[in-house]
Structure formats: C-alpha cells, structure tokens
Length: 113
Length: 113
Image 1 (tube, rainbow over the protein chains, first blue to last red):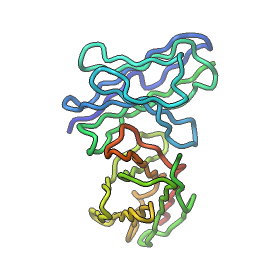
Image 2 (cartoon, rainbow over the protein chains, first blue to last red; image 1 turned 30 degrees about the vertical axis):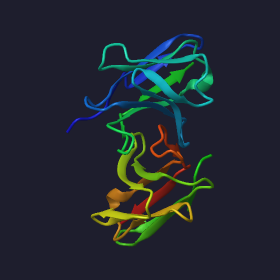
Image 3 (cartoon, rainbow over the protein chains, first blue to last red; image 1 turned 45 degrees about the vertical axis):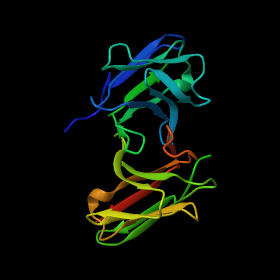
C-alpha cells in the first residue's frame, strides 16, 4: 500500500542553523501539507501546497519557513534559522483531492539545542 | 478556531464502549477522525462529509450533525489496540473542500485488560 515517507526520522541541530525536512508524498496525490506537533500537544497546521504554490499557511509559518516541490516527487520544508521553540515532530501529509482523506507520514522529530 | 473535544481522557476495560465528541463554533464542511499512538503518526480512521451521514467499519463508527456542528466517534466492545489519542480534524470551508484541517486537542483513550 502506498504511503507517505519522511526523512530524516530525527534531526538534531543548533539554534540558528538551517534545516531541511524531506517528504515523498503518495504518487497520485495533488495536495500536500506540513503539520507540526509539540510533544504532548495537538497537531497544528503549518502550510498547504497545491499546483506548485502555497495555497494556505498559518501564523506559525513565518518568513523563516519555506516549502518546495523541487522535482515532482519530493516535498520539502526548510527552516532558515531554527529557534528552540521549533523543536517538535513535523508531519508531512498528502491527499488525492480535497474531498479525500489526508495521509500522514511517520514524522521527523526536530530537536533544536 | 480549533474544535473542542470531550472528554479529554477516558479509561476503559476491554469490551466496554466509549463515545468521543467533537464540536465546532463554526459551520463544518467535513470532519476527519484520526488515532495516534505514542511516538507515531496520526492514522486516518474516517471522514464524514456535510450531510449528516454516519459511517463505520468494524466496531468504530461516527456520526456528523451538521446543524449542531458536531461529530461523535463511537467505539464499541473496545480492544486493547484501541488505546491511543483520538483527534478530530475539522474543515470549515464555506466553499466546500478547504485546504487544511484544524485539529482538536485530542482525547486520550486507555483500554485496560
């Protein structure tokens, strides 16, 4: 069964460093998302992406964040200058159409020291 | 605005039933239910679209009351494997079929032998 994959599973970085989190959505899906979950809290929406552009973003998704779909299969989230409060689990999700369910990847745990 | 889930936590013995509620202050287009086990990604359970339908598979079902802007998840004859945190994700797009899901804080379900 096709699934969303994410790499790396765990990333440790120093405050101020740039990180890139990678996702490979399910191949025939058209809508892509990033969510984050701080330990013990709810899942929070960051950004949605459709037709090679951002379609919606939350207040969390400020100028330090960017997304790209560089080659038609990967979907990346870049954090330019990480802060301590960026430490969280980051989930990528994809869906075939807007009336379909979202499938989540296994997540990348980001730890900012 | 995030949906409100209740209860926050519930403890059951194997074989008992549970109901988890999700209500929104905004009109809902659809409700998505997920279960998340500790350290894992949310796993899709079901999606309910506007129209007040009820859905189910196996011993897990859900209802969606569009007028009351709420959904309920029903777990009958609970099994140990049902343990986890249940999240509802809501889509409040007036146009129908928004981009993002807004998740509630979750209901932690523990099933004991």
